Length: 480
Image (cartoon, rainbow, N blue to C red):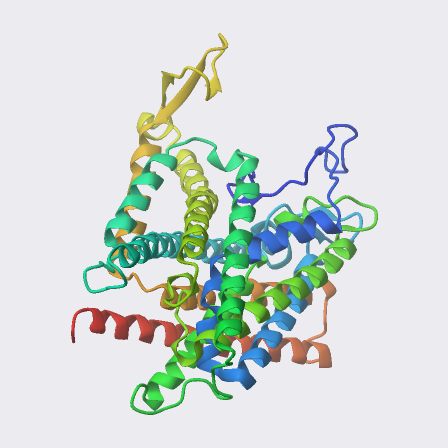
């Protein structure tokens, strides 16, 4: 994954030729349906898959699969609309938009483009917090599982506090965040993709093994039943929160335009992207259905918020391998999602304070074998004081929030709610209406608006459920 000129991630297909050039003067794009599908699947299948069994437990055997299919359909449809906005004007020869925000600005104007940018920044920061929590929980799960096996099965003396591990992760990111151009390391996406598939497949395998060992399919048609363990209000809240978890698992609109910018033409980029969307969403939905259904069948009403922290999955060492994969994936993913925020803020600061030495001056620190090159050919690292202070503050704030609210599935649900409607539904629909000049109050206009309003209601419900879950968990953690 690369960082584009405006600070947002821009993906590149492999083996891009420098000659000839494309119509915009950039190196010839060589991406295909298969490379685009690989990018999409890599972006979608991640830590969100770990909460799907819990989401299924809230919805049950009837509503759970139906909701997942509905989300897959909405995601595919709106992603197809968004793909048609890659070029402004003519879909073959029109001006290219290199980022999501560029596409919104071209179709809906500067104000909407800025609004899109703010939503993206909030979503990216939320992802940093979510990744910090997930990594801390995974590291704690490794320690807890090994402690139980060392003590002969007794969990009483084994700590379940993720705080020390969250702090350790924050320290690692403090160092990594100061690496200039970290997002330009081409192997980052490869490592992240390998790790995400590793823990997802291990998790699915352990679920299948548990169902096979017990020879029993757990769960209910309507999910967790209202009774002594859960009140009607809690049931409604958890159902809403489950919607946010599923939305988070499917979200990839934030980088769809960047993926499309890797595709060669002819055929037109939008035609190739439509096929890639269809294939990727189908593969992802099948994989998600397997993970969610086998997880619910294995654990029933007690399905954990994070699959890899569950007890009863064996062999435990394989569970440790999966959690290590989560940690390795998210150490890099944190930087990939944070670097666009770093670049955006630093670019804005440089434009606003062009004469500030604190903001713009770099102190050259010579390095033995890596870094930038000066005019004499010597390797060096450019230390910038604004970058040092700003990025350190960012990591400290995200780590502090993660310590205060260390609730995995609550945060996942809230992140899904925040990003789903504006980025996956609203902007694609509005850009499509504007680009195709669809007449107001026509049948298609009304249907698109109804879809947008329906998804807005789901987003509000999911956000409310997740916030209520965070409040309840905070009270429970304090013994209130």
